[in-house]
Image (tube, rainbow, N blue to C red; front, top):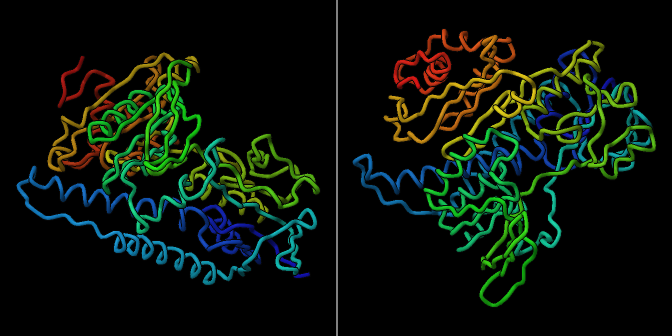
Length: 461
């Protein structure tokens, strides 16, 4: 049995961050990967999806070029698109492999099973360590009545655009995955219908900006039905006949599609590891229970990322990986960070901190500042004026509570808001920051000024 200071199971964003940071802190580290290095995010999640989103946006922009005085013929090459997606993935996964090797992290391929609290078996060989980090990630959740297969896709199958674009696609789920794939396939030529069980898409997010995103996607041509559930389907000669019903009950309807994408969430990959036999506890949804240090009920055993707890976001897993590795190295670190959420549609949606409703429930005297992108010079030059920057704060103390953005580059802009919240900034602090002109970031300042009814480029109501 080989002995290490730290064993990390999984090399997704959380796992490879944990392994590299452990090695940087002087630990002898073993990383174990059952699949491809880089995990879900790099191989079949964040990265290939964003590559397809960018390509679909480029195609959409070419088709709409006459609005800018440009005339170009846009043609779709699905095999070329698949090759582009794969080239991006190869560069990043290859880079992670190089980083692991360069930091002297040993890598073993195979499925790990616990044979002791800090001992594992991989391919018949045993390894043990002083500390163990579980970073096993997640997988698509299934929906009763819609088993994955040729007709019903999960998000991994939906990436394979080179195998054909369905004429009619039903997307079940109005979260980030459903919305992103819905727009990808619409722009590649599918007639897309998307349904969401809750009254609004992105049900955990800011309702106002989520509603604006829904309207923008519908304006583009997607059919979106909220407060709707799919109760089953039947395959017939002319397609898949799907039965839809109102979530609150009532008269249903039937639609006919060629393929169905189930995007109702993800579940942790924590089965088959042998956790309970050694006192590592999971909750009813399968998430490994951890404390603020990411430590499980067994001292020296940590769990991070999708395996540990929501939200299931790569950047959260990355930060958790660093914290768990530092604790494994004898430091004392805890997770206490603002976690931004992003949907990479066009327009992008991003959010950090409290929504209006959450702030009111928490007892704050809520006040809001808004800046519409129709008043942004930079948005006008981009031809992307559909959107809003919204600041939520406490009227009494001026404390910044949350920021919600719909518009181009929202995924980049939200980092400034996250930093401001981390620093305990006031809305005034956000307003005082000097932003370059013309940029989209000026909208953060303008929304903060609107909070105080002092905005320059919009009328203060």
